Structures are given as structure tokens and as C-alpha cells.
Image (cartoon, rainbow, N blue to C red; front, top):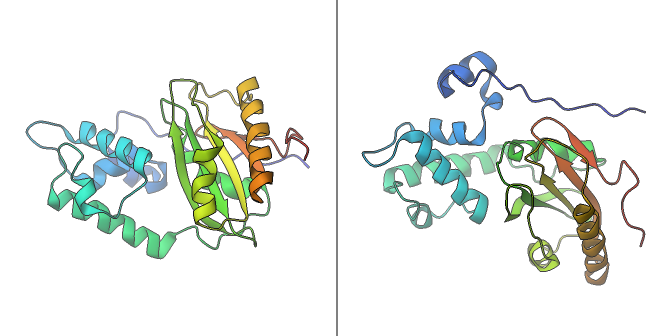
Length: 226
């Protein structure tokens, strides 16, 4: 059976975030635009777009939205904006957290990844699952160069061990938009599979994606044999 392609709508870039959200829906906005909407304005030293970029970069590296003090370490973010961001993410966690979402096939996890597809650098992600294949969390592991990110099993499995995950799905974006996995992608998949076997944590799949589509190692029979 031919798999369905998940498509994200990319509205005209000349529209302001509020206009784009009104015409195309909030889900059509990039992460940077969503941060800009939350911030509302910049300051004397930095416009709202640049400030949104700084905040996105911070969150991609730390994946910590709840610590108001740490959010204020981002240049241009004061107590008021830090509190607003922390409150927004806490509400999202309470109402929309993907926890308990059961993953039965690669397509189920893709919607939680595609918003990283517009990144100008490769971002390597890990999706932690419990024994019932329910999502525990989705987090960025490393961010690399334009077309390459270096990932070590220690970085992928450290959180999996702490969270007592039963399985992991790894994923990364291709800034070029091409979905063909590289030889390095295949090698790191084999390395991670072996490391996971030693730890008793299954590596279920490696997904390569852009902003609108994906390539699954599992669906294309590229997962290394145990």
C-alpha cells in the first residue's frame, strides 16, 4: 500500500504572522513566527523577528521552556516575556502534550517532527517511547552544520535511560529538502541500533524529513538487522 504524503501549507512569506495565521490557520506558521506572535514586539536593541530567532535557537538547544530564569538568559528576553513564554508552553503541555499518543507506524510520529523541517541546520531528534509505544517526549539531541550533524549514542540514549524508555525513534531534517539518506545516516543508524541493543532499548526507526514529507528507514527496509 502506498503511504500518504503529509503536506504542510506554506503561505506567502510577505504576509505578517498575524495575517498568515488569520488566512491559513495557526498551524501554517513556522516556529519562528509563532515565537514572534507570542513575543508581540522586540525592544530598542532587537526587532521581534531577531528576538524570535534567538528564542528558537535557545529552545532548540536546551528544550527547556519552563525555567523563567533561564529564559531570561536569552538576550532581549526580560521577566515579562520569559513568563509569557513559560506560561504558553505549560498550557500546551497540559492540553496538547503528545504523551500517551500511541505510535503504531512511522506516519504516526511524523506530525511531531515536521515543524523542525524549516531549520537551516540539521537537527537530530529523539522520540522516546514507553513499553506500550506511547510517546514520552520528543526532544532535539544535537544541532549541526548546514548539511551535517554529529551525533553520539551517549547523547541519544542518555534521556532514554533516565526516562526508562522502552524504545526510541530517531529523526533528523535535511535542510536541502532531499529525503535520500546519506551513507553517514546509514552508519549512525547501525551504531545506534547496536548501542540500543546493549542498553535494552529498541531503536525502532530513523526518519529523514523536510517541512512536508519524510523517508522512513523502517518502511524502506533499511533498518540494520539485529
